[in-house]
Image (cartoon, rainbow, N blue to C red; front, side, top):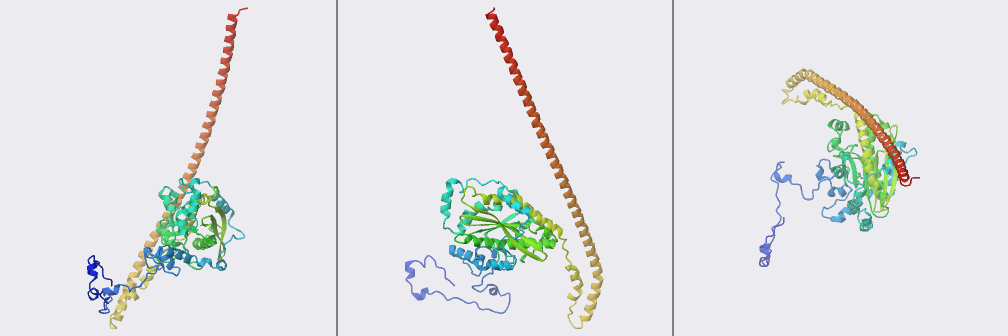
Length: 506
């Protein structure tokens, strides 16, 4: 126990007191008075007790951010250790991926860092080309402007990964939530994660994924019924979620610096996306529609250092019970080339506009195929109610209590079962009614969409006809103007001849 020092004790005259007067008191140990579990001093954990940052029993605030990054990798990080602790934690995070046998080990688990012989479906290959070529607006007044680019590049030379993540990464893969706040309504269902450990997942090999940047679907994208179908429960692992608030990741980013850094980033992204795709494949198998994900590009990644960025797409191939995961190279970008500096940014923008709605709709369609989960535990509890409540207070009262509880249980169970069946029938009827309303609403939407398209075509036809009519009127007016001009010229010539004849009569 450390004694607090007051201003008077720091005075020079006070410091000249004898050692006996200034001797610090010895630490006081508080003895246990009894074995009472409610004894207040027993509530205080002993010194050195650390919270497990990966324990699912703790709230998210206790198991995230700086303290948990490196402890999950095997080395506890100090909050005040500054840059050294952050660097060591990031090194520890990528230590598994530096193993020379890492790629081979993944292949034994049917994860291949290459394209398969058959490749993804042709329409998905065209999708990747479209994502690269689709024009998109770029932010104004950035350090990518020509007058700043060279100085910006020089300022990032030999700097840390964190510096690249803060200054360069947003120009390649911007934050979706910030863009939503600025009006990008298409990103309302997207959540970003930065250096977040995917705590609810099981790694394929090594440590759990922890990308520098992750884009996933928010938990609020799904209603309560859909979450029940997914079977997602707090503090329990799930193949569908990376964290409590992050469902079905579809884009990851890794930032690196130094020699051979991009290869490590590619491995990290590949592992993360294989884990993410595993959830989609599992959902497709549960829904009985594996054709919806077979050879479909379901996720993307961006790996970059200061100079170069690599964009990949990821897809599964399913043969019976076997699933293999592959990646396809989409682009390699020279970040500082004038023609390519916004390639990653435009790719991510196109991903939000084109791929994201398809990704969400694909998940929703598979969830619609999964039947409504039913809780049958209540019936089991009713059957066991007699046994659970028939413990006798004495041997003498035991047979009497057993007989009375058994009679009471047999008397109540038919009534309760009938009530449960009635409620279940009402739920089924309500579900059928909701499904019918949904189908009717969907049909109405199709009809309205068709009407809208027809009206659009009619308006376009009217616009073309109006334009043609205006062009005809303009041509007619131009013809009349020319004829009038020619007539004026003839009249003027005739007038001049008459004047000449009047002045010079023969």
